[in-house]
Length: 299
Image 1 (cartoon, helix red, strand yellow):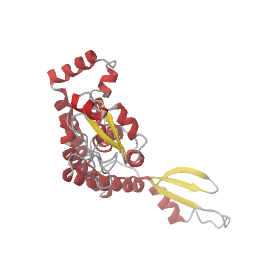
Image 2 (tube, helix red, strand yellow):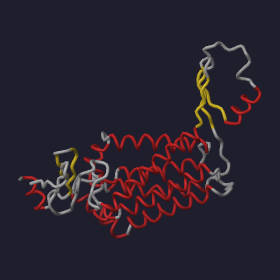
Image 3 (cartoon, one colour):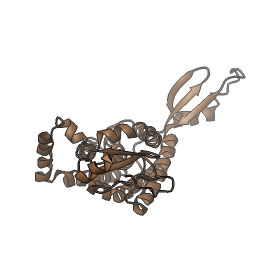
Image 4 (tube, one colour):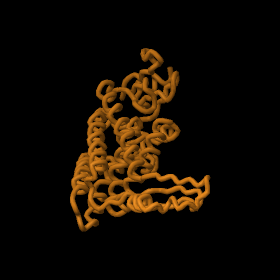
């Protein structure tokens, strides 16, 4: 009853179901932006007025989308001056900086313990890390890690924590854009369309330990028979892990995950996708709690 009164009064206007049978209600104004502004209404209004006066939110979003598209196009070209990617990274990083300001600090902490969010986060780190290694950690890799990966995390995996009504309504289109980004990266990687790359291999050897070499070195050693000199013991084992293949498989997982959530976001625009499959959220209205049948109302 107290929760319902709070919702009606507007004190709390965003509702999420954290687990079955439990509704989590957080204050709409309790965003990361407010926390960084000192937790006061005055500081929060001052920051919001700057955003509103200069239209920073649409500008940052346009810059982020343009930077991601420009980077994908540049990856297919033989760009000699890699410093150009630093410009792309600078203009692209503001999109997720803008996104994190609109997130609820309470829900971010809750998502930090959610298995689905952690699973996708780890796959993102491994996948983009392997791709960055194939780019030899140059400026292209930096742009990939600070533009594409954070944008994916904040606008898909952590989308449920946003306190922006507009962003939540536009969530299906963010998912669609991320699907196109991952599909393009998948094609570029497996089609070997990205120039100036190296396929590194992590080799685990029972005698020499763990070391990194290139795929060309592995192929050459297999061709010349360097690994089969007849001097090895019967327990000598060598295993190769191709980072490019590992990164490609992680990209496939992220692509499937994004496509599934994209379809869900179009079919159920008011439903949370990570916190729980049955959670629903509304702004300034009643909070609906999804039970196993999805039709119980929280009083």
